[in-house]
Length: 244
Image (cartoon, rainbow, N blue to C red; front, side, top):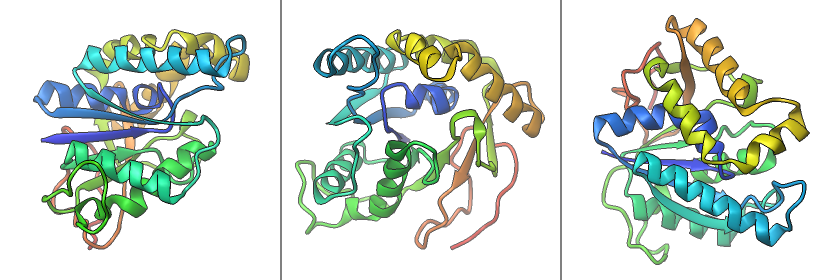
């Protein structure tokens, strides 16, 4: 199974989907981490150029830790736009990964890079198999993959329909996010939160909802051509509607 996880910024994947990624790794899935922006405004002290280099190195370290292939799109942080250029880049990433499952940020997230990433993924997922849309990588041959939206920061405005039990891998998730060393100080400056607390409080809250110690929550994308006759999340907890 090939699993493609999109993040708007370096550290998004590990923050909101790191436990599920670890569960997929335990299953032997081929993991691909696609980071849309270079995170170049994510430092209170370094230049944009220095920050981009630092954050790419941190993203690569996290991907290496879990055995994922990093796909780095490199768009400017906080200025991701839906354009022909971005759509082609996202489609090319989908073709590189040839996924059976795709996970992306929610389309209604607070951060514009998050929400636009989710929007482009949801809008373009079927285009990966269209031959007349030309990218560096060739079109996929598989059916349209299943798409799940990951949780929002602190779970604000997000009502999960499915959960993944991450109780046994939570400590490893903390280690994954720790690869993004530059972000702990940045999170404290912006939100007055330590990164560990930013992970633990939502995980316990979603776990309380799901009936396990710790969990991550997801919502399927309900679009024509994506029929959820079975779930592709690891040991999925909870129920969801069947559509399509």
